[in-house]
Image (tube, rainbow, N blue to C red):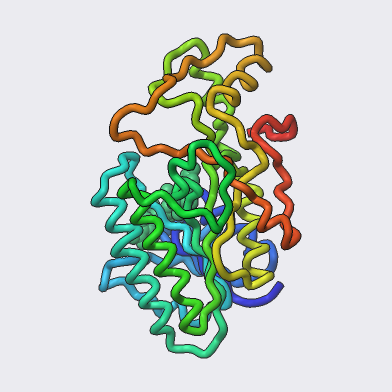
Length: 287
Ligand SMILES: NC(=O)c1ccc[n+]([C@@H]2O[C@H](COP(=O)([O-])OP(=O)(O)OC[C@H]3O[C@@H](n4cnc5c(N)ncnc54)[C@H](OP(=O)(O)O)[C@@H]3O)[C@@H](O)[C@H]2O)c1
């Protein structure tokens, strides 16, 4: 593979994708908002940059020379404060889209934007696919959906763009299976009957590569094959290690952001993309 690839947001996923494209022979530019991370980025990408989407002082001229771009930005505070969400997914993504439209280059660009399968919200545990309506009743979901639409609008401006809706991420240094097992015998204040979606880091990186190689446009769920409730997942993980089950609520807490959907990955599979990790129960998943 030849060409130039950019990764905006070299966090957990962005760094892994940047390393992958570097190994594939592309010249990679990667960004962080934080000067203290520049040194670390030097070990990951050829061209490290400080860039903050939404900050008018940030120089976006590096976009001009790219053939492919991954947008992998997320609020970096642990809290789900609405201001943080609004600044990244509202102001930040809109400003970035405007900078992409204003590129001073005729070089065709493909954009992949990472979103979340959480936008389906409460589908009452039913199967949903990319044509299912998203749940805008939650303000975070509504912001994520607006950000998706802003990126997809690039398709009307000569730039092919796709949205990859990720499940909850597991992988190296994100051993969700062990984290769930560590709650064995304890109460967790979440509805255990709800079905969530998951995906391994390895498959995210290969999904991003697939999207770039095939110049995908539109929306795609990038999730593994597991479609079970939190309770069933924790029972399987704990039984496996002879541990007592995790104890979940049977109801929703007020104000909880609900995600209860069997998210289908058929659309990507029909195009030829196969997740290599079926689920975190897969014995080959070391972490
Ligand atoms: N984590 C999950 O389970 C999950 C589930 C579904 C979807 N996703 C989506 O997957 C994507 C990547 O997640 P991740 O876990 O890799 O996130 P992460 O590790 O928290 O990294 C986020 C990156 O975004 C950068 N960033 C934050 N605000 C920015 C802004 N205004 N402009 C430019 N860059 C900005 C951060 O910069 P610094 O380097 O300065 O920190 C960091 O590099 C996100 O879009 C997230 O919504 C995640």
